[in-house]
Length: 404
Image (cartoon, rainbow, N blue to C red; front, side):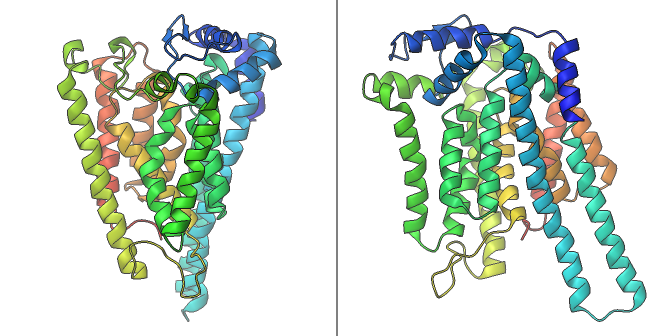
């Protein structure tokens, strides 16, 4: 059904030019031999993405022969691949919740009524997660970001979700390669980095294993950026990972309830950064405390024989997605395409936090979807988005423990 829907979108809804022409201008300059990131520009401004973006869109340019329709079909494929990976992740997490209920049924001698209640809980759990999976396919804005805009956010997030799947399958080193490749396309993937660091500390048996994974991430970045790091290293690092970039007020989705002077002010930027770091610390302490209570250790969950303890799918997704959500809530700005950074994580977070009443999950998702479909953004749509974001933050804080 998704394939049919995506093809229908391409055929019946006009493509909207926003960044594709600028992407191609930047790629053409790279192909012409330019290696100074200060000089690579497009119609929308200077190049602000790492080198993986240039390699990917150079390949897209050659493959599609500059045909927008061909590009749209390629992005349909990317979207379907991402959807398959995301649904696979959801299935693995849902299975763990169902298995835990079955385990409680097998361990305890209970009467028939208790057994029926547990089986009913299993059925409710399975169908609840199926609903969450369906919701991952229903966003109008996400379909638009992929098929009608051709933004680099989609390919970057596809690689990220692939890395999550590899982490769940206990392939940490290969997962780090894929994760770093995602970073090389767009640096928003770094919002997951605090959670990933915690997982690397906990999934390995010692500092050596953690350092090996971190070195893999760094090596990928060096190899990807090598043509630029060996010619104009300062320009490359400065522009591809531009942390002090000032965004345009007209594109912000989350802060239209402020006036433009406040939006561009340094004070707001520093306040949001401080809150981001503060809440990362709060959740890190919470996660570590729970891990200490459950395992007797804060990190390095290895056994006495040196074998690694495999982290659960629930814990891996929870840690990574909460890390990203904190960054989203306190983001300097959110543009429309940034919705793809966290849309597929929202049902997972709400279901794992067990938000009640159940209808509240749908209301929060609807508020966020509404905000990202109002164009141009208004003070009211930004307020709706902020209400939903901080309600989710409250639910995450109120969760008694992280998933096991």
